Amino acid sequence: MKPPPFDYHAPATLDEAVRLRTELGPEASILAGGQSLIPLLNLRFARPSALIDLRRVRELVYVRAGQDGVAVGAMTSQRELERSVDAARLCPLLREAQRCVAHPVIRNRGTVGGTIAHADPAAELPAALRVLAGHVTVRGPRGERRIDADELFQFHFTTSLEPDEILTEVFFPALRPDAGSAYLELSRRHGDYPLAGAAAIAAGDHVRLCFAALGPTPVLVESDDPADWDAAIEPAGDIHASAGYRRELAAVLGGRALALARERATGGAA
Amino acid sequence: MKHAVTLTVNGERVEREVEPRLLLSDFLRHELGLTGTHVGCEHGVCGCCTILVDGAAARSCLMLAVQADGVELRTIEGLAEGEELHPVQAAFREAHGLQCGFCTPGFVLAITAFLEESETVDLSDGAIREAIAGNLCRCTGYQNIVEAVRIAARAMGKASA
Image (tube, rainbow over the protein chains, first blue to last red):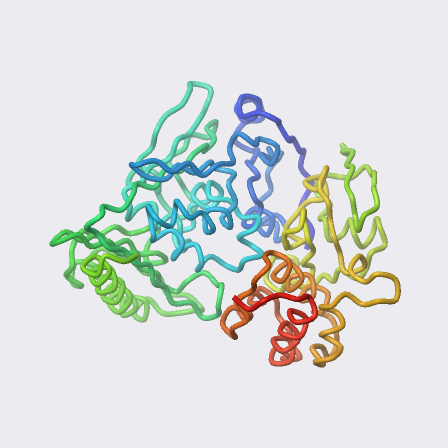
């Protein structure tokens, strides 16, 4: 199918984009890489009054590595993040999760800010952001503010951004030198959204897991007890897998991801 | 309201006015008559409409024509030089990498990007299959397509990484 009609704006600066966002109101949508939004338009699940395309806002394209972590401009392609040597060194989990996202051709256009703002609970980067205790920066008419990952994801496809705010940066904190991490998922076909995904970080006795596709948001659990994971997740059954099967996947993938993270923590690699 | 776009398609400068909702795949086929870019699913699953946008492979059904303002596109029509096939096209012929041919333009462009991206290319089965994972062939010709990638890599002088 073809997209429904909409107005189109391609501001050259973030200031102009923020102004348009306020002016056009909540019926307008932000277009980043379009790898989720354009299918939604083609299927007519989304009918925005206008698109504000951020492709010309080059100030939002960067990967800045610091001692604390990696700051990624919202319009940076997922492929660029995947290829960043600095990001892979500071947060090895990112490259591992990024390679599970669809296909290279999709990652060429899909953006880091786009997948976070889209907040699909089955997506990989939201789970990575949450397990790493990252945050995002958003800009609106009242200025800039920071939202922690724990506060960001509210529900399926719903974040705590106000309707007049634009996500500008995603910050992934560096993995502690004594910690190990891993991301694993299972999908029916290579490149599909997973039936379930598990991101794990282990540092000594402390563990963090975040599950993808097992609830209305990425589900964070700070425990190595599968009973706690089972209590935290809220899997839904659908045509691809039953809720019960997804519960079993949580235990299996969570266990494997955690074991791998622990092995990497003691092994010192990745 | 229509928007003016200026872009380069297969080395030629193109200027048009387009509706915002026009997909890039439809722009290529209906506005420019470049029907070699095939349209299968129109939601980013099949990979038939894959083209090169500033050298990087992309789904043309997941781009609006207005987003292509200022970019350089390569489509299947822009690969061969006159009568001489591009090495990837020649490799598909040699390895019998196609049956019905509907998916072929998308495969050829995705593989061209994969092989052109760097001097050395990982030619393991896993890496090749990852590179073509976003393209569906319902004649199930994958085995020969994988072989075509290796033949093309040799023809293009790519060292195996």
